[in-house]
Image (cartoon, rainbow, N blue to C red; front, side, top):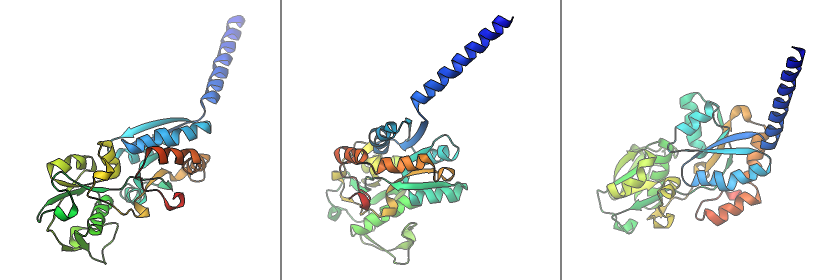
Length: 268
């Protein structure tokens, strides 16, 4: 009996020791969520290699909507995500009693006004329908893009991050606004004729940024961010994510493979 017990103890020691060695070889596993398309690519090809050089094992999970990546992060299923701007994050925190924290901006594909019917902004006919994102933050981006293109005028009293139709004081071409889920907007280019498409959804649908009638002048609050849980503030994870985005290796990939992306001012 004593021999059997010693054998079992020895086996357990070997299993535990092997597990420890495998864990040390694997490194800490972190899971990053990103929206399908360019930001999943950015996480995979620009961010992941730098983090792996720091000893992490990195898993990238792709999402096709704007809700699940934050739910997963808030629930602890993700360590970080990459898909949203700070205003969208703050709106999520408020509506869901969550405590997410943005840590660093990343280069972001600008929203564009795309059309299957018109070759220029000047060609847009009176009374045309135009599709915009459904959520307030990104619909505000759309309205600001239309204003910069000279199609509408927004009241100076409007909240620039929560613009509504009622804030439009001049609609020069009597545009009719159709609000849709962001994932639908690339299809609306053909279905409706005019659509304001966030850059990541445009690129995920193999649209060319250069084909837009006009691109947004991106406000710093609209650039996407890497976001973590507040409880990880000040952690080594936060420090390493920040350093990775600011590294030469990350920016070399951006310059080579993400042309046309709007870069944070400190990187320009």
